Every structure is written in structure tokens, then in C-alpha cells.
Image 1: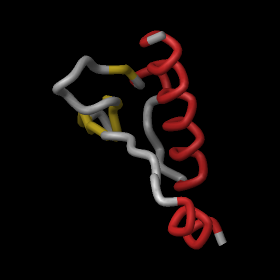
Image 2: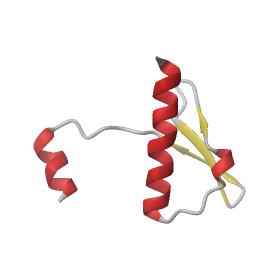
Image 3: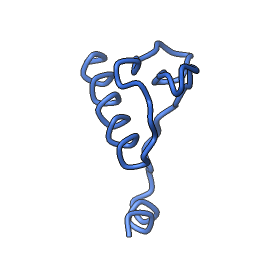
Length: 66
């Protein structure tokens, strides 16, 4: 189960990076164990960390999507 969660988070993160136009090293994307952030990667050789969350409220998510 955890492996699928990590794989899904990496996929979502890569989609985010493409949409945002962020130039990371794609091979540097790693899943981390709690309590560390969900994702680590390198941007211009410098480590960066990301915590992924899901918009929980249905109405807010719809508003943000439009």
C-alpha cells in the first residue's frame, strides 16, 4: 500500500513540475519517510523538499479548478 502511495505521489509531483515549468533533475525525485516531507528533488543542484496535500473540501476544490 505505502509503495503505491509513494509511486502516486511521485507521479503527481512530476505532473506538477511539468505544469509549473520547474526545471528539476527528474532522476532526483525521491519519496521520503515521515516525518520528513513527501518528496525531495534537486533544482539547480540544490535539494528541495515538498509536502503534498489534497484539497479536502469539495466546493473549494471545484472553485480552484475553474
